[in-house]
Image 1: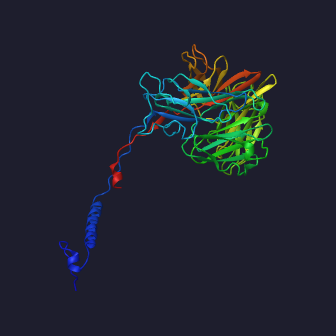
Image 2: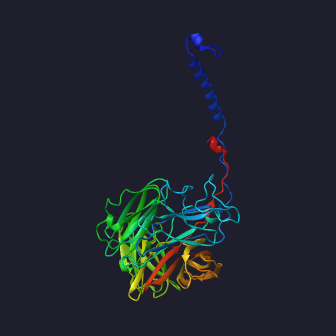
Image 3: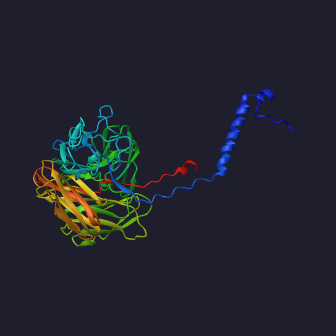
Length: 541
């Protein structure tokens, strides 16, 4: 027997005692059947052809950096110098300021911090000034640039409550924006010169060359410029591997504040050579490590480049009195066997008696290289795997000591990236105080070195420098014509290379041969923007 089929033209409820809901469901089913039927009959849209154009280079329009807490002490004197090289970028207006970090409730309103080298976010135009006018200055700015190409220096607060600083450049001031913090201390508990390039906030950092032995008073400085708290873990590695400790776990850094962590509070044992891993569980921080060895010297230990099988440490002066190499193999289960090479005036050579170094997996190894390792010539140190088929990533730091008249100071060099297209350092001084150490790690290279105008006026000067393959060239920094005060130095790779470089600043104070060395690394002024093509097919795939 056939069942009666209801007509769509009359109410189901009237015919069979049903409801209007049944009619709605049946109508929806019919519509869906029609849609899916069309989808089955119509083939998917072909994907758009990939874009044929090459990525386009563009200059960044916002750079954000963090500086550590200034050195404390009665005799400490900390200078912060900011600098944007050349004539700046093509963007209109903008500003560049360095200000004390402050909690959100008291901080001047500003855009959220972005990593250095990031393009300006869409919909958040950088504050600008009218053409020919100086940019507006933040109310709490320690340093504010008036225009690109002219550095500005200011004094940091050395009080007991001093915090780190936040540096932000937008618009024309952003490409290559560089900030250097330099402290001179004439104090037997940590005398010497300490210099550091301010860096972007991050989530993971490696430091090698720290210590808790003898007179060392090393600490990690954590600065949080974000609007939310950060949670940080410190993990230390020694010659026996990772050192277990709960004291460095779950450290909270409130928003707009800095935290100093003395390494002797993390591990009670005296360990001569340490690697320190800083991991940020939530948020982002600026992380820096300061080493102080009593009257023997002090300086900031730069964060290492990411662990890699080959490492180059530029900036060894010819007049060093001692050198100590510290290498860590932090990851994996493989030991590291590395060749040690130095870059002299005629290329790479292997130092007699220090041909190789063996580092056990997860551990730290150190070796004293002595004061004659460079043959009294400027150099760079390179580590490469003895067996290229078994590369093991490592981090490395080199402690350099210079002495005169029974007094000394120390600096720490670390694995650094090449100069790339352009790199700058802000705090350079004339009168023979500054030396550039430039190494071509590959082919022979030609670089252009430019000294900017100084904080007290003057005009820029430039010169071309030829660097033979595998060689290190040491030269007094060019100086601006006229003016006085600190100035910026910019190195640009014109051909050949790659090139690594460092600037040594040396000033004798109270008979102490104070010095500090900062590497110059690619300022990432340019970002590559890939070509894109419209693909309507994504709507029906």
